[in-house]
Length: 301
Image (cartoon, rainbow, N blue to C red; front, side, top):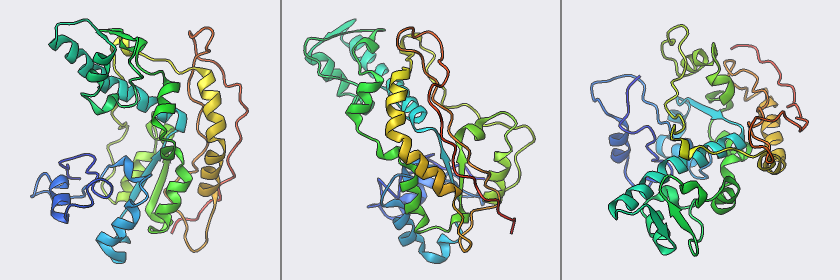
């Protein structure tokens, strides 16, 4: 496997107006490496244009050669993880802004000015009038998870079934290896072997696990908690889309089978949360979870 210049080239969504040579420069880091290059751009999944643009760029014959891996996480856990990712990237510029002015607090319009310095603060900064932001206590002013969800309005990224249906209009089902995130990162998971076979590369060493490169911030002032009331509300919102996903993955078309390497998807685990009244410990799942339709086994071919 060859290392690319960018983990997420974003060519088929954000940089489609550029030429193919631009894409190659974002992909190829070592001209002498003759192995497989991976374009690991998660935003392609929910991009309405990406599948059709790949077909346009490569043509039907080359599309048949491509292999795609789709890793799906419980939509609430994914959304909360992204919220924390945004906080982790937004707060340092705010602190830098305060330090540059030798201040430990910002008031009103100063908060808005500091937030405008970084794109990751876009949905985290509420109306600043009458507010005071103190260094190391920024979470007291930044949007809560519920407010962030309402401000961002990005629910389309969690409509997995609708996104996959767009890809299946271009790519045969066997070319998409759809994996459950929790199963993939589990200790002793065999799914990395499935990924290697799917890409037709050498197996990974025995016992290898995915590195946790995207770990949350260890800054105690940036630690947030997911409230169970938020989980319950979002579960209602995502109940139907999640069932649509389970049904899509369980379905079997004789003329368009999924890869024999793809295991049954299973169900998403409920997002870990704390009770709003105590905010001290994870709460057992009070919601009856609907099992997905039974996935039909496929004989290897």
